[in-house]
Structure formats: C-alpha cells, structure tokens
Amino acid sequence: MNTDLPITMSGEEPHNRLFGNEWKYVREVLAEEFRTSSGATMMRRLESAFAEKFGSAYAISHVNGTATMHSILEAAGIGAGDEVIVPPLTMASTTHVVLQANATPIYADVDPETFLISPQSIRQRLTPKTRAIITVALYGLSPDMDPIMEIARRHNLLVIEDNAECFLGKYNGRLAGTLGHAASFSFQSSKHMTSGEGGMVVTDDAELAEKVRMVCTLGYRGVGAKTAKLKRTDIQDPDYARHASMGWNYRLPELCAAVALGQLENLDELVRRRTEAAGLLHAAVAGCPWLTPQKTPANCVHSWWTYVVALDTQRIAWRTFRDAFLANGGDGIYAAWKINYLEPMFQERKLLGRERFISPDHLACYRPGLCPVAEQVQPRLLQFKTNYWDIREAQRQAEILAATIRKLS
Image (cartoon, rainbow, N blue to C red):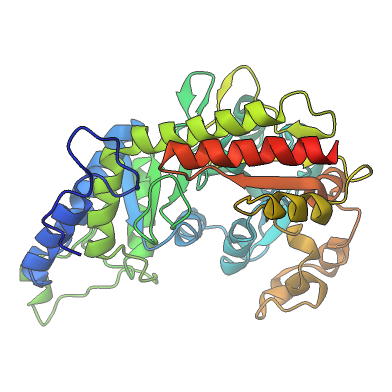
C-alpha cells in the first residue's frame, strides 16, 4: 500500500477507521530508527493528549488494558490477603489482574436491566479485608458510580474504573473514566480507538500516578507520573542505581503510541459512527417483545462499544436466533463471556499458584448460585457489532436484523 496517498477521496466520508494521522506518525517513528536518545516521543505526546482529552492530571500508557489495572493494584499496595470486588459478567481480565496481584476476587452481582455491577450487591460483599472495587463500563455504559463512590468513601476503598469498552460515555454529565480514583482504557483492536494493543491509566492522584509509572517501568527510580524515560546521563553512570523497586515492563511501544495518537485525534468521530450504527440496530429491535435492549439510564450517555439485547430464550433459543441471523446474511453475533468464576480456571483450581492466596471458604464460593442475576442474564445476551465504518453496511445489518425478527415472530 502506498501510504503517501490519501486513504479516501477528498470530501468523501472515510469508510475505514484509519483516516487521520496514523500513517504520518508511524513514519515519524520509523524515521528516528528507534534511537534511544529520541525514544518515547510519541508516548509523551499520546499521554499528554489523552490526559487533556479526559480532563485528567495524569495519563500513563501501557502495553495493554490488562497491564493497566494490574499496575494500579500493585501501585496501591494491594496483595495477598486483600479482597477486590469485581463483576462476574465481563471479560476475564478484570479478574485476572486481581489474581496477578495475589489478591482475592470477590464477585458482586449485576443489575438485571443494565447488566452492570450492582451497588447493593457490592455492599453485601464488603468485609474487613476489602481494599478495592473494580467497576466495568460494560458495552460502553457507565455503572451507577455515585453510590459506588459513597461506599468507597465510607470504607476507605480504591475505585478503579475498567473503561476498556467506554470512550466518551458519560454519567451525570461527567466522562466515564474520571469518576473513580483511577481508570483503565484499552486500545485493543476491537475498541473505540486502537493501536492493535495498548492501554492507558488516568488519575488525578499524583502519588498513585508516580507509583503506577514505577510499577509499569521496571521499578526505575528516574521515572515519574509525567516522565517515562531515564536520563541518558544517569544510565551512562556506572554507579547509578536504577531499580528503586520491583516492577514490570509494561511500556507502550512507540509504533503503537503513534497509531493511538492518530486515533485519539479522531475519537469523537470514531465514537459517533458506533453510536449511529447502534441507533440503526436499536430501531430494528424496537417493539419486539422478546428482545430487551440494555437499559441506558437517563443520566448516562452510552458509547456503544457493542449493541446488546437480552433474548427471551424461553421463546427462542440463542443458537436458533444466531443461526437465523447468519442465514439472512448477518455479520455474526457475539455471546457474552462465561461468568468468570464458572470458568475452568476456577472450577479446576488452575490459577498458577494463586489459589494458595485465596481462603478455602472463598474457593468454595466460586460455584453456581454466587451471582444469580449475572448467571441468569449471561446466556441470553446477544452482542451485535457497531464497528461499521461505512454506514451503509450498518444499515444493511440493521435491515437483516429486522428481517430476522419478522421471520421468527
């Protein structure tokens, strides 16, 4: 591909997701030939732009949106013997990071209409060992954060927003990702903005930001909340003691930072297109008594990572609907992730040794019935794609969905 040529014709709406400066910034990185003396330029630009976009004091880039949450937990000193409350209905990374920190995941149930972690269930799961809550803005919708933050305030808990699926969503007029003490974003390939892989931590807490940076940069003493690279004069000194603490190498590569920066510059448009696609799908579902869309409360703005409905499986089997949609030319339907604690890793105790940090009582709790609402909802969810960069394809998929509903009604 000739990357010097424009990807779309002038004046025409681009029909792909790389319609900005991504190629330009990648070429800038390659022109530097990865010289360490000029390294991390794109990382610094991305972090500064991301912090400004989300109105946060600090933004710290990571290699992915799982490392982000692990860094926050480690930076907060959460470890063996501590409990972290998480939802069971989400991608398993939210659980994995708790285990990676040697802490114990405690599952709070979800709301039956929004499918998001329930503040009431969080209250029921609190113990003297609770140290943190990780909320998930599932499918692009923020949880009910005000009561969650009040719980955290009363019990001195850290709140981490797993915002991997929610870019520019809002809760009570505020951007999701600015509501807790820290937030994690993902740049994985399916997300609103992408660099193939990557992630970002945002926070207004200077001390936490300093520690997150150190955790994700091999414990280097010369880095800081807004400094990701050691000084050359320091590393050339034979007496320089580099590692102030244990840490991980979670740094975002410059090529990924370059692509992410280009995507960030067009984030509003990328989110708008998903929102438009979701609107078409929502219109197709309207009036169907056996498909119930995820509820969007009046005080929230959804960012539509995907469009989700709950199917009345007493009337139509999940696979029957999926097969009919595919037969009509549909672009596939994703199922919701299996409830985390019912995955083989828990049922067969294959936690890479982390099971020794979890009490026998808690291990015994990881079984059916722990979160009945989530268990009832999960097998019924139909997740429809919204990442159609050509609106004509989104319209076609909405028409196919409407035709499938008519056929099965």
